[in-house]
Structures are given as structure tokens and as C-alpha cells.
Length: 343
Image 1 (cartoon, rainbow, N blue to C red):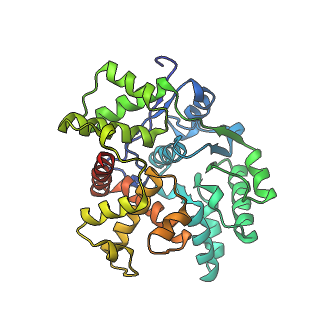
Image 2 (image 1 turned 135 degrees about the vertical axis):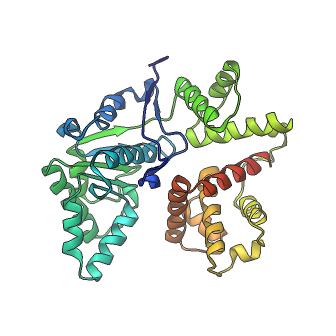
């Protein structure tokens, strides 16, 4: 621990079948503002499976605003336990994916098989509970699954930014464990995050520059990475990024940059065509729009050819998973963020 900052090591994804859970910086950086989370998180990362039982934190519910590291932690926990107990014993879902697979199992007459598969898990992780469909069947099944797994001593980890869409029974289950509200990083944590990200990207930053950036950018990890990309661009080109930025990014700017980057026309990108390359490029637009603007899923869908908000959510989740497991996608995202930051 340095300056009240604890760095919790999370396994990287290199050579791992659980690469879907990857993140740009593998460790979780917890400053004094998140000190209450450290003890619980360290208990979730034992050296062997026999020392990982902690009934007082089961289920563990990670809450907080976007960008504080809920998904980063959930995926790191999934990677850790996958290495301890094997891929088949760890279940990782977004709330939407859980609902989709549940409905598919029921429609195919495989509901009992799906329930048995869930019951056999040593670890279940479900992200973005606020997006769980407000259907009695879905919420009841997740509630019953949590009951069964916790009762059997299996670990359940859930993330949510809002409990309002959840029914009373499911909310009660969440309150039965430990709720950890993660806060945006303070100055010390931001400095460490920038230090780790700079090392990972090969960006040279002096101690003074690290401190200046940490003080100036009072923001979450994704915004810190954008600030780091701006610094790298300015350092390598001599361009004053802050001076030339034209104001807050707009969706049409992102569409234009992505279309040009992938050698597409904007009209084609906004069309109803479903070629794989087009679907991927649209999903990249969605991911960047969610990362770099304050637009909602519905607003992005409207501006991206009047697409349904559920389609937009699915696109964003697809790129999140690809960025974790596919180096080419991550490189594209890094380069596109640089271009957009410079504009």
C-alpha cells in the first residue's frame, strides 16, 4: 500500500481460456475512497479454492456509477476462479444474456438442463442487473438460482447501478449478502491508474506529469485513459489537443470517424445492411459513443439509423467482450479514441 492505495492483483488473460474476461489493466486500484471494498475483494481471490469461503459476503453485490470498475472486478474474479476450479464451474453472464439463455432453454424444452447447469456452478457472476428484463419468470429464476448456489456454498457475484427494476424478492436476496458501493477514484488512485496504463501502453510520464494529470482529470478510469491518449498524441505530434478540440464529442463525429477508419460510407453505416463488417463497425460506434459521450442507448439508436435500444445495448456488450479477447479490436478502439481525442 502506497499513499493509501491498494493494488489488488487480478490475473491477466494471456493464454487463458477465460480471455473473455480480460481488461486493459489487469489490477484493480483501490484508493482510500474504496478502502472498505479491499478486505472483501481480497477474500474473493484466495490462493486455493478451499480458503475462498466467506458466507458473510455471499452474494457480493458491486454497485456504483459507470466507470468505477464493477465490470473490471467481476471479470477479474471470474478469471481467478476459472483458474482455480475450471471453466465449466464458473458461469459469467450479463443480465440480458442470462435472460436470453433462460428463455431459449424454456422454448427448447431444456429448462431443467439449464437449471442443473447453473446449480453445478462453483461461481456465478451476473453483470448489469439493472438491465434484467422485468418479467416475473426471469427475475424468479435468478432469485431461485441465487438461493440454491448460496445455500450450496457457491460464490455469487452481481453488479448493478440501480435496483429499481428488480422485484422485491430479488432485491431481498441481494440485501442478504454484502453490498459494496464503489466510488470514482481519488487523486492517489488516479495517479496509480495512470501509471499502470502508461506502462502498459509504453508511454513515458514523469512523476510531475503523472501528478498533474491525476489532479486535472477528476474522472473515472475510461476518462483517465482518454486523457492519457491525448497526452501521448500531443507528445508524439506536438499538437495541442486541448486547444484544437471543438467541444464535446457528438455521435455524428464518431460515425464519421469510424466510417472513414473502416473505409465505409456513412450512409452504408446507417443503412439496414447486415454484412458482418458493417455490424462490427456499428457496434464500434455504439461502444465509443457510450464511452465518450453522455448519450443513452435510445439516443444512440436514434442517431444510428433508428435502431432499437436493445440492439444498441447488445452491440455495446459485444464489443466489450471482443475488446477483452481480441487484440485487433482493442487496437482499433485505442486508435479510434486517439483520432477522436485529437479532433
